[in-house]
Structure formats: C-alpha cells, structure tokens
Image (cartoon, rainbow, N blue to C red; front, side, top):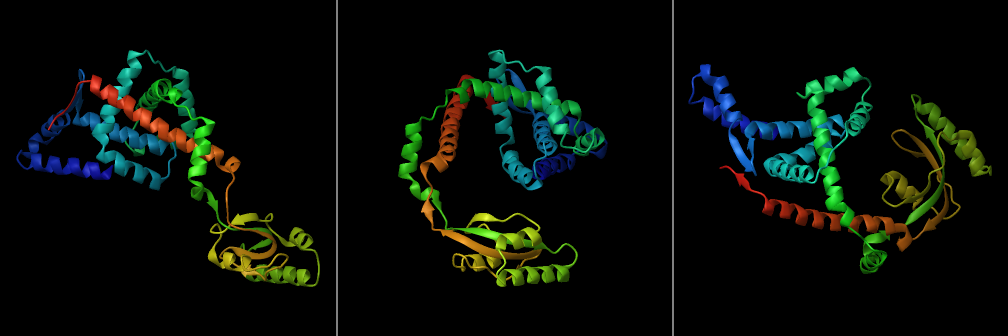
Length: 317
C-alpha cells in the first residue's frame, strides 16, 4: 500500500509544482475526482481506487492476517488494484442482476467474529482508526465480499466436480509427489530450562543415569519429562542437532542428553520407517482439493471473462 501511496504522492508533487500553494486543496480535490475508468454506466475515480485499496488493507488487518501475509498480498494487489476493482464491480453488478441479497444478520455475524479477535471493543475501534477506517467502511467491505462470495458460489463453485477416477489417475501418474521421507518412532523425555539451566542439566543426568541402570524408559519419562513423548516424526521436521542423533540410533537404543536452546531431550528409538510413497487413502483429500482448486480457477476465469466481454469497460490513459 505504501508503494501505491508513494506513486500518488509523486504525481501530486508534479501537479503542485505548477500550482500556487494556496490552490493545493483544490488541486488535490481535482486529482481525486479524476476519472480513471468506466464500467458500464459507472465511473471510477482515483479516490474510488484509493478507497478500495485502503478498505482492502483495513479488512485484512481487521481479520487478523499476519503482517508478512498482508505485505505479500498487498504487494501484488496494489499493482493490480484497478484491475481488481473493475472485476469486483462486474461481479457485484452480476450479483445485483440476479437478485443476490445479504441479510444484515450475516454482516453482523462476520463483524462479531472479527471483533472477537480483539481484547475489547475499544481496542477494535482503535485499530480501525489507526488505519483510517470506520465501522461503516468495514461493514461495506464485508457486504461486498459476501455478495461476491454468494454469486461466485452460485454460478461457479457449484458447477465444479471432481470424480474419484480423476483422483486415482492423478495419484497413479504423479506418485513422486507423495514420497514420504524416512521416519523414526521415538519415546522421549524433555526437561525444560525455564530459568535454571544447571538444575535442568542435573535432572537430565539423573534421568539418563536411571535408564542406564536399567529402569524402564517410560517410568523415567513419567517422573522427569515436562512434555508427552514425541512419537513418529519425519526427517526434516526437527532441528539438525536432534536429527543427527535420532537417525543414528539403532532400534531400542537410548541417546544421551541432547541440549537445545530451550531444554534437554533424551530419546529412545522404538523403530524406523523407511522412505516410501504415501498410500492413496492418505492423500486422497489432498488430491481432491488440488484438482478442485484447479478446476474452480479455470471455470472462474472463464466466467469472469464472459462478464468482461458483455460489459463496457474503458480504462482512461
């Protein structure tokens, strides 16, 4: 969003350079009212685009999306802001044409879900104000989002089907995609450092000594471990210091204490599972979702293209 604001800022500096400071507000108003596109009988001004991008940003913030996700999303969104605004206008026009209506109750529910992410109503309101938005702005954005969702669900999503044979054929043709790395089945003892590393190291040594003396690993874990046993883990899921130890154990072996930043582990290897291709039943849902998304995207683009061809769209230079 900052990048787009900078672009607008540069444009305004260029305009102001040729106008007396006393006319700055008048020039700003004129620039904001500039028509940048026409969709059917509706004009889109520079202010409309600014508001659309701002409301989208505020909506993402309000819904609790992480900063990195918002930054990545907006980097792409800002470069295609006008295109996205035009598409939304076309979809909303279609929703209105077929009589899609959104009950206030649904908007209220969504607002309540969003507000529940905040510590209090005041914190929620402060977050909106911080980003230059109002409750009305957010409600309007939610209303538009729900309208768009309903019409897309009705005219696109409901017509997408993936049959079981397609799932099986995809699996048979691309089994390499479902290769699972080797795994280990572990019993474990974890002793957290908390604030006293020396005390934790002492407890870990005591636990290791009991196991070495022949006491059952599970009994020692019940006495000393601060967390449940790890269980089955796949290569690549653990930090290298741990993987180097556990993948070097033989079945039944017990490791010595393995120190990490936050605590100390002791492992017992219950068994090894070699690398293998996941069975169809394990990945069926994953394949279905992938194929569904592909088909949906293709059908959605075709549907949107038809809306564009039927509409009058002019982008001003």
